[in-house]
Amino acid sequence: VIVTYQGDVLGLGKWVGNRIKNGLPRDQVRDSNLF
Image 1 (cartoon, rainbow, N blue to C red):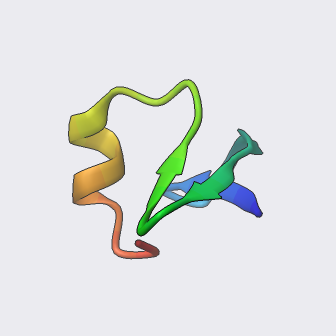
Image 2 (tube, one colour):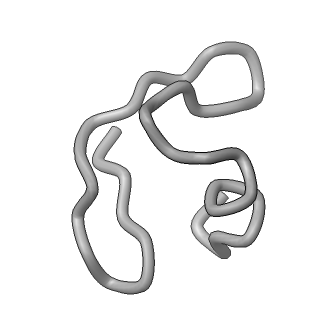
């Protein structure tokens, strides 16, 4: 999947279970409305 945050593409992430694994800090992933 393409990971975006506040309209910016941060890179590609992979679905692992029910969460996305990528280089983002967990707080940014949790705050993103896309997830």
